[in-house]
Image (cartoon, rainbow, N blue to C red):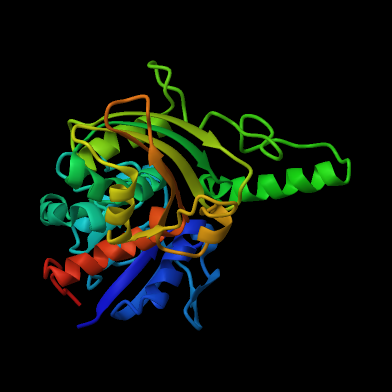
Length: 341
């Protein structure tokens, strides 16, 4: 059986990656439609070896569409996801708009695919924050083995998480510095080239940023509401790939060797962990890959049952596009998707 799929936000970083992943994974499509704003009508985007011309979201008739992958921001998702879902398609949304809605499942297929059945309440499924998605893939098998009590995270997030504008700003600033031109800042609060910025998204009254809050509450919703989570999210001058230093405290004993063996068998995880120069993953190696890479697995001696990990993944793929396509694949595998075409 084949399905009609629409990608909303097809001209953006994640939208283009969604089209790429659909083609690479040979998703069973009868038709793929690229949708964007009216100003992008006619813009061509790639789907495998084909070129698709973008149509306007405002004027598109979703009747007969089975799946809609959205990556167009929270405001558009808030307005359009319910309208689209009411016409029949299942909406898989990449924005933060629906993640904490009790009637919308927040899904990472390797972690909580069983929660998918709840999508029928609103016909919407939420994709988690890119940093959360890659982390819970690694945490789930360890939680099953020894039950995680507390997670402390420091992220090192690439500029692609801020969209094309973020990537353009890093490139332009780097070039300006190299040729002694003035450095202009538009997207980020401070210069990003040759710098790190401990600030992603808006500040909340608690002192945390919204990005940090997302990681905290999304981890609890996906994995376990009893886990205590604290995060510091940092933007770094890397184009693609989010990295995370993660400290875990468990209820039960677990050794680094046991954790390494568990992770080697875990779906979606690739362990690269040699205690030697270069025996670990970096964003450069993970770009273009779908796995969550785990390295530097070691005992944390500051707590009774503790481990420290280094987690890296391509934020545009497992953190967004691939996870969304995997959700659609899971819907089909579990026979939860009603073909309406």
